Length: 573
Ligand SMILES: NC(=O)c1ccc[n+]([C@@H]2O[C@H](COP(=O)([O-])OP(=O)(O)OC[C@H]3O[C@@H](n4cnc5c(N)ncnc54)[C@H](O)[C@@H]3O)[C@@H](O)[C@H]2O)c1
Ligand SMILES: O=C(O)C[C@H](O)C(=O)O
Ligand SMILES: [Mg+2]
Image: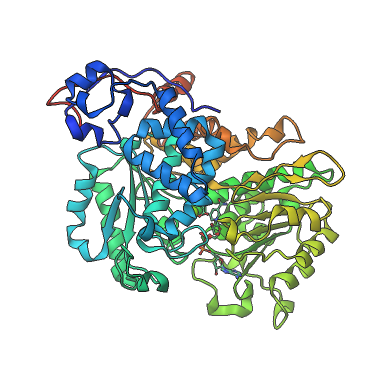
């Protein structure tokens, strides 16, 4: 689906001329500069005489894209296009969204990040590095260039997808998430900034790599780390008080802790904790709707494998939903969960091995777990779960034995191997389908092709349960509302709207989450729900009458379309 269209923008005045305008991805039109603009901006002789429109440019760029043989080469091509011309880059993506999503985002982006120092050609975003802590404000202001930002995506790169500590390569995830905000939620790329906090790396390969480009020391920890992050958040609050601060892929000991530290001080959002929780809640709620027994969430027995940022975020969201729907206490609702991590089931016996921020409600207290085998396979045998969610980064952990055991006890086992990229996924959909005799309801974190249903010409569509289906809309709604904080109720409102948009709501044979090709229209609806909730809750700083909100929000979408320029030495740059 093409990106939503909006009102045409006025001609803008620009003060860049000559090579400068051609080298600015924000302003550059390449061969689409008109004859008049070429003359005004002093670039007539710098371009071939032919003049293209955006469609022609997209056609040429698509041919070039197609000629790259591998996904990583396609990714490099698109990165390079982005550094040259934002309008063309986003116009191309919006014409080929389903095809290019996995190239600019998960899973290919993981490969680009892990090879960052070797593939490096041109930098983007802002690197705040530990040795330059005292110069942080200067570096921040230089990168912001006097703009009023709507969005900052920041990562310290300690837990990139499932591929772990990637040091300075983490800029790739901040930039990729920002791209999705523009593509799926119409955020103007000039009002977004990707940031990496380069606090060192504990990745031995990077520490040894002569070409590594980041701060080549062990990570700073403890008070020093907290001071560094605090200084950064302080700068955002001081210079960009209305900007949404999106945290991405922080390590497990920091993700939830930092979210809780800042969430009542500024508009912050942790995608791995809150975005993943929200999208999985919608997916888990809808799965039972497609089976005969139609059990409620509270009737499910839920095993989550990988009790990190995403696993715990999902557990908390699902627990809160059960609590609200059924009037249960948090403690009672938590009894539906069995959290399994490296040391097996989170159970009382583990004592100090359980991380501080894990609520005791999620730790099993039953005496008969003491001294018992508490590994995943044993837990599946004893607990007989109806839902199994993977956020462990442990490739292949959902074995044939586990899936067959689970399938013995439930008509339609709900199995979501959510770890990214594909090399970390707990199981492949085709295997889950086979081992469950076609009964499993499957969702994955990375894209997978449909599974052929044996003995039929039909295919099972594997819904992609990735936070990108919801975070752009959650963020956009918060930005539109100028809310001081992103509240839990705003997230739930967005998640509920997402649920209504699943193709399966109209036709049970269809996918249980919308397709990524529809991400722009889906996230637009999510953003409206978040905006409504923020206004209703009284946290919004804007107050647009309800009947005008849709049109008002549409008018503010950035769309990849060329505007007319006039040269003005006092214009924008
Ligand atoms: N689909 C999505 O939208 C989505 C969103 C967020 C995260 N994820 C994926 O989930 C995975 C985890 O991400 P995270 O941010 O929670 O990371 P994290 O580091 O915070 O958590 C990972 C957890 O898994 C545990 N673990 C690691 N190896 C294990 C093993 N062999 N057995 C059992 N437990 C093990 C760790 O101890 C940790 O508690 C990643 O692959 C990430 O890509 C997917
Ligand atoms: O980046 C993604 O694809 C989803 C998620 O944020 C992750 O960390 O895996
Ligand atoms: Mg993430």
